[in-house]
Length: 180
Image 1 (tube, rainbow, N blue to C red):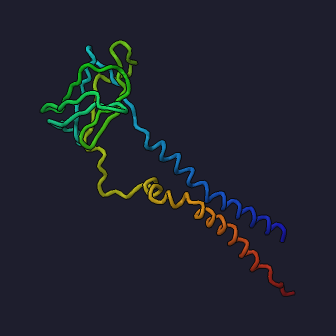
Image 2 (image 1 turned 180 degrees about the horizontal axis):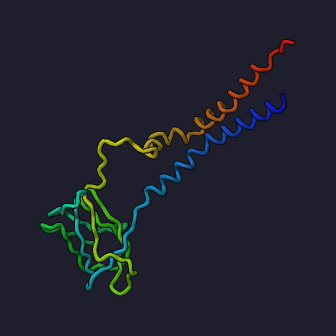
Image 3 (image 1 turned 60 degrees about the vertical axis):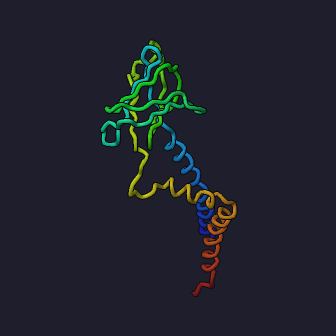
């Protein structure tokens, strides 16, 4: 009888702890999933950044508006030619993003002579890569929809209370008289 009570208490405690854990796992998963990839690109003489804008199938996007931005403002802007190429001059090294219609790329620009050996010679931006069509939402999307409700202390308290009350109620039903 004592072993059974201890086991039920341990399981109820484990269930209560389990109610709190999924939120922590989802929070760290979404934080790492949303981090952008920064690509190293070397600038040419005179601070020239060259690049190309393509669609998701790899075809060049002609006459697309290109904007180079840091965290606070637009640094430069231009338009692609008929082959999707663009060039921005007078830039300095640093982290920036190249923004086009429905797409963006994050780049670390290096002045000539300071770039690490694995640097690319130009930026490649895929326009339209942010579109998601006909796909089932990810778990992280469901978390963002239910997140405010799941982080409510009332909901957490109700889940913990249920996790404790159900095993206790089931144990109370088993304590009836035994027949000889």
